[in-house]
Image (cartoon, rainbow, N blue to C red; front, side, top):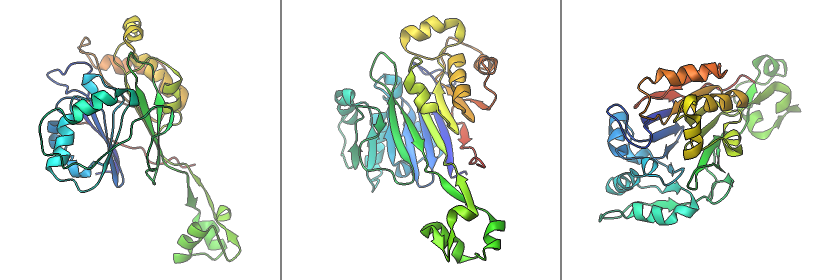
Length: 305
């Protein structure tokens, strides 16, 4: 199992189908496990995918339409039932505080969950203490109700160059010491290494094309993005606040995305392959995944430079 991977729990838009559960996505990122948009049936999909409530550290809700949040009560109650010992941060649009409260207390149960609600009201870092190993930011999207996408970015690191280290007589534990301290015996870390870009992930759900979509997608190693409609129904996409597969792929191509995951498919299209064909016709040449329930997608390896 990859230490950094996306686990798809559901891929349907608006209503579930025989083959597709409502939305639900989990991102494993080292010691953190982030859940995005738990729709109906998420708790059962977690079981099928081997995702435990104990592993969850954050829940990110883009907006309060039912297919993106009606699974939240079950997930919260499972966190409570399983006596998850750590706090679970929950990010969601601040304007939907009333809906969050309704979902949190949708039924009677013994509330033992340590939830840390952190509503999002504007673009920028999500409220609350920084995650530490990465930054988590939100950007406003264009949908009939308030909606935010989320972007995770790892700080840049250093890739040590063995030949330069050897030439300067630095080996063994001294390599780590140089990396931590920045200088050792007159040798600066910049002289024996190159910058290693951090990995980037973004989650973009229900939205029309807008600046926020591009801000989220820029330079991503892995982009999960809705593609509810095909281009022949672009007028419907605009009316209801959604993207077409072509638009999503054009964003990915323009933003330098390495791996594009299309999801949130409308039941009106019987052949999912149409989404892939449209994405390729739009000029996206990177790795492409048409999400299926229970798909696992590793985060691509770091760029070499």
